[in-house]
Length: 243
Image (cartoon, one colour):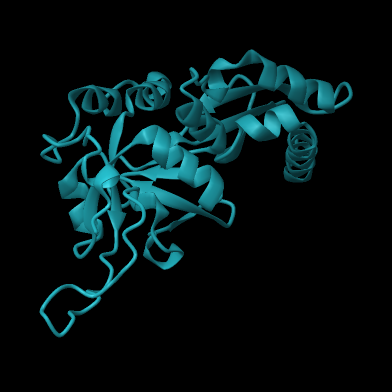
């Protein structure tokens, strides 16, 4: 007996042809300092690659053999069918795609399944390490860290770390006062959705002093839960002040 509730459930993506949504295309082309926030705001429908399960075979009368069809959610498939990719920091992420051509280039045998981004975000939080990758393998590939994924799951507005003044304030407070050779810190947008922690050091610093400054800043970042939760994919870049 078929599951009528599942079969009669409306499909919100019935007319989806797999092309890139216009709003997301505009977000991907946005200037660097606006791009990540625009992407998170524009994400609605994404395509998830799902490995097709083996055919269960047929009964003697020609009907399809019994198999598990209990869920209409493609993200509730067995763990081995849920495709994951490596994420910076040794984590595993769910790859999502803006359009079918990008998915097929990376996973030629997978099924491109349209899914609401909130559903994917919830799966990332509960079934993987809480992170996503948009269009992996493509020139516009973007890492989506845990704070953005949480916002996508709840529908809240996400604030990029370079737009959050409290991050630098808390890092500086965590340093416990003046650090010799360090003039200031800023957060800038980096490639692929990453955040760059800019360390402006005085010109008289030698290599050992710069390494020491970077270590102290890293320790302050890791010690603060607020900062740690909002800086996910991070590059630390020392530069001479005034350069």
